[in-house]
Length: 238
Image (tube, rainbow, N blue to C red; front, top):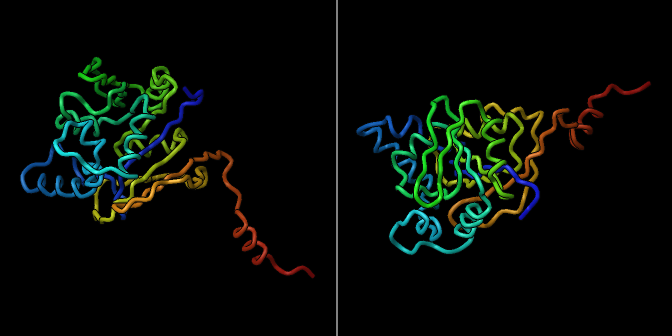
């Protein structure tokens, strides 16, 4: 068991930067729902093809084995707690099976007051009404040395990033355009957040990107190229 619990994001994103279609699934109806589910299915298709995911949700069929499947298994094994926003929970509550796919405590950041919701298979949802810092503190208390995943939606992920509370980002970059929807990484203060590449699996279906997040409250320096440009811009001496 590791001494340091990491906070990480693992999410699928379209090539133009969206992680979900526009609107809430539980609110769209008719043709709009058909369009919503079609876009969502295309975005997440790689996940549904994997053996580990299919077994976890009791979906018939064997599924694929390989680097994508290994990554999903790794994410599941390292996660001791999941944190999500009300938007993600509202959509999932309607469509998750009775045995929700987390099998860990899940903290839902919301203004809605509600008691714990216990599901078969080890998942219990706790509803946090006093912000992301409180949710993270409570999550660390029950993580048991494992990591904490910020599951979504996009605004919740962005809020954690803006607050400097994320240690690692994994983006599965899906080869598709969505045109509009819920955008990832909006409102990030680029002067305070630096990312460093981490090893990522190679997939035939999509591109995996992994980064360590380095939060720098003092701001980053200009770097080698920036210093060179600054020197070139300086007036000649003498």
